[in-house]
Image (cartoon, rainbow, N blue to C red; front, side, top):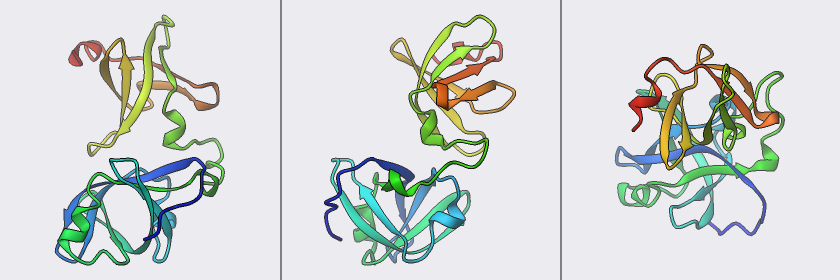
Length: 180
């Protein structure tokens, strides 16, 4: 796996959580817009490790198992090889993303959006990341030195406008207080 000489923006499609099995597979959180199209054999990715080093990797195969994306990269053939991928972000150059689906957006487009109360106009904060705990996605909103977890559901996120960098919400009573 060679170092990536390209200097451009990248988009994270998955985050490696842990090793899986003994043949070099890893379990990952799927952050992609279309996993069946993105994670195909021989697809080229870049792995960004926690120290911010990026290296190229070629996918051998991928599948879903118990709600997780399982990835097997060429040349990663043992548990110890796979252990080195723990915490890596699986990325592609942003230029390879293509346009979002009509009327849609990519999750990474939500990062940095201002989260505002739809009725009062009160600003809660900005989306720092999107969490996928199983079930409904959560927006991690950075608010005055703390985190508010907002379910990404149409009944709560009543307007999502990444092109204007804003998400208008109607939080259920008590939700804000659940996040001290």
